[in-house]
Image (cartoon, rainbow, N blue to C red; front, side):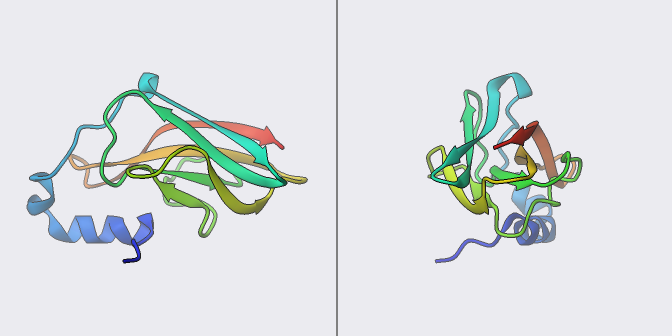
Amino acid sequence: MDMPEPREREKLLQAQGAAALETATPLATSGEIEVWLSNNGGWIALAWINRGTVGRWDYVALFDHNPVDPLSYLSSQWQYIAGHSSPYVTGTSAVGAQYWIAYCGYDYSQDKYVIEQSDGPFNL
């Protein structure tokens, strides 16, 4: 079964409203999360460590700008955390540009995704 990308997931969670709160998990604190990018065979790899709570819909994503909006990641360059291991190799070439990474979680109290930790720019 294909998982909807975070942009679509946010819409689904918002539509659930109070029902989604029943399965809400608290956000990890930024001190519990580390993120970085690396070059994996010429492709950008998203890497993370979360020593805190991993939410069901937490994800890491690649940005070509300093991330302020958690949903402004590069198209198809993201990975849900739950059930996946670090690093996640993207389809973006690790040549010639600056990139950022962000770890994002769904904040049920705000009813939206938020950036829990980010880093960059990286020149790979």
